[in-house]
Image (cartoon, rainbow, N blue to C red; front, side, top):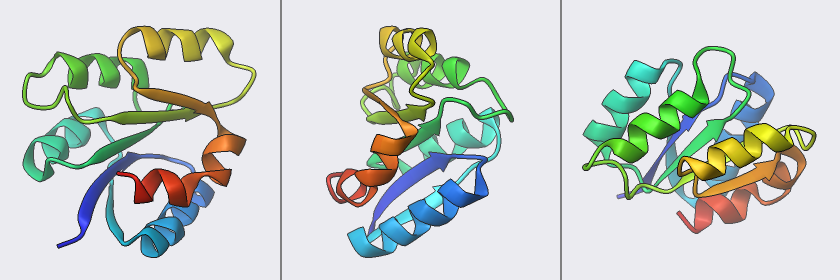
Length: 119
């Protein structure tokens, strides 16, 4: 059975890259488009990793991290967040509330297969 990864990513280019890397890493990725679906899928699938686009315009990723980390059943799931390298304050805020790993988009893109393989 493949490892499950959840991804809250609205950028179609990144979604395609994640799908390609997932195939190489041998993991299954489920994409979600809302905070409600993220929590629902995380509860039902118990993924090995959650990937969050911290610039996701569809919902507030900071609220998502807070909700995931405050839920006893979900708080142990690692969260990898990616964002523009210029967003130092957003990165600090995400880390403070429990995002396990934050990295610039370029670093995320470069290390994607490894990130998914280690899930």
